[in-house]
Structure formats: structure tokens, C-alpha cells
Amino acid sequence: MNTIIISAVNLTEGGTLSILKSFLQALSMSELSNIYRVIALVNNKDKILYPNIEYIELPKAKKRWLYRIYYEYFYFKKISNQFDVYLWLSLHDMSPNVKARRRAVYMHNPSPFFRWKVKDVFLSKKYVFFAMFYKWAYRINIHQNDYLIVQQEWLRKAFGEMFKVDQKKIIVARPYHEEIDSKERNSVSTLPFTFFFPALARPFKNFEVICEAVIILNKLNIKNFRVVLTIDGTENSYSNHILEKYKSVLNIEFVGLLRMEQMHDMYLKTDVLLFPSKLETWGLPISEFKEYRKPMIIADLEYAHETSEGSLCTAFFDVNSPQMLAELMIDAINDNYIKFSTVPYKKVASPYVVSYYDLMLLLLNLNSATL
Image (cartoon, rainbow, N blue to C red; front, side, top):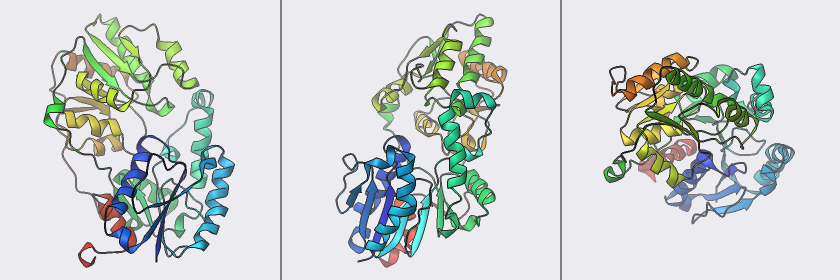
């Protein structure tokens, strides 16, 4: 029987783990599992068990990068020689050295496109190093793939230009999100007026611009608001720097990382979402929060325009301008949304898919009508 191998040994949490689950579910619950033998190479199978899927656990991949490199470029070749591999799908950016009739790689790390500053090296040495590493690692074997997979149109263009890949070989596969029930959308009345920015502690998340905007509001003696940030200073040197610099600023609450159920509660209590990140492959909080049909003030960057399509009340701002952000925050506090608008949907060029099942059909060169 022909085999599909999905390599995802580095995916253990967050959005990337959700992507792995979606792929496995699409294979497990469809007729594809009757046609192909499906093997998943994972770090730990406990959270991702699906019927009709075989698992090979490789927990060392997450412990050291030397293990990861060994697996990608040496060990996976041995595995591919043991099976009749029709499709090898790598879900974590790197294109492994394998034997397969069809190959594809999911590229979800945009760090090669971030313009680092000297201060970023001191505040997040590890992340800057990995960004430099990824720019090198992406190139290895990239032209051996039949397809590259990205989440947005801007990434298709950026990867195509950076690595000289024909854009017809780059599939845009936007993350699918179920609409929340209308009953769950009902806001919880809270005072003071609440702004919310959920993000991990990374330099490109741009917490600084929010904190500087709050300082501007404080100088104008505007008090009837709060800004909730999901860092607490313990995550890394960058978050510690942010906390030490802005901990005395009024109206900012550093609450730390929130669990999924806490995020939903916070969305209900939030009046306006802030999202100033300078770099994203998607920007999950934007697509999550727009389901609540409440205002957003977000980065005037390509990723944010794409992710916010379909939102009803959105304003964009220069991510380097605390003043512009502060003015929009003041407008929101005063219930003045004249600068906010709906974001229309735009047509996405082919190849483009709207589900993980359709994506698998494209990767396998199949037509659903013939199955």
C-alpha cells in the first residue's frame, strides 16, 4: 500500500500543533485512510491520537537542534527507504532528505523576513539565532518539493522571491476557524474600557508601541481604560525588559499567558483588540476576535489586512507610531469609530484551498469526484 508520511516532530503546542491535528483528522476521517497507509512522525502522540493513523515518536527532536538536524537530513532518509512513500509532508519548515514520489513542506515561520535591530540580539539572542538559522535551513532541499504551503498571499510572494520558487508551486491554505455560537458572542459588560493584546513574548510582537501609547493617554489625563497584556516578565529577557521599563505605567495590566478558556472569557470582556505585531504568518487572535464582531486596532501590514478580511469594525495603524495608536485608542474610548471600517474579502490566486481535506487532495494529485 502506498504510504503518506507526515513529519511533525517539532510541533508540540500552539497553532502549529493545531495544524498537525487538522491534517491528521482530515486523513483519519476520510476515505484517504482506506487508500493510503498514514504514518505520523511526532514528538508525543498522546494529544493527537486519531484512528487509522500510525505513529512513530521521536521526543529527542525537541531537546536539541543537533537531533533535529540529524532526523531531517539523515534519519528520515532511512525511514523513507523502509516504506513505499507516495507523499512526504513536512509540517515544520524544513525540507528533509527523503525518498518519496511527491514531497511538500508547510512553511509557517516568517522570521527570515523580520528586520532585526541590534537591541533584539541582546533581548532575545536565541530567537534571533533561530531566525538566522531558518533563513539558511529553508534553502536546503526546497526545490525538491512539489509544493510549498503557506497561510497567506503575501507569504507566497515573499517566499517565491526569496528562494526563487515558482508561485504556482506555492499553495495558500488559510487556517480554518469554526464560527462561534451567537450566544457565546455576547459581551460581558465591564469597566473600565478594556483593550487586549494576546501574544507571546517575542521582540517582533511590538509590546513597546502599546506601552508608549498608554503613556501618551496618561499624559492627557485619560483614565477610564485598561490595557491587558499576556506577558508577566518571567518568560524571557525581552518580556523582563518590557516589564521593568513599563511596570510603573498606569492602566497596563501584565497578566501572563492565558489558557484557551481564559482567552474566551477575556475576549468577551474586551472592548477593542490591539494587535501591533510586526511579523506574522497569520495572526490568530485577529481571526479569533473578529468572530466576536467587535472593534480592532491592528498593524497596517499585509498579514493583518489578509487575516482581518470579513471583520466589521477595524482600524489600521503604523506599527512604529505610538501617537497614531493613541489617537485611535482615544477614539474608541469615546465611542467614535469613524476611522474604523469593514475589511472586504479579496480573491486569492490559485493554487488556493479552503480545507485541509482539499489540501491533501491537491498534494496527492487526486480529484474528489473519482474517489
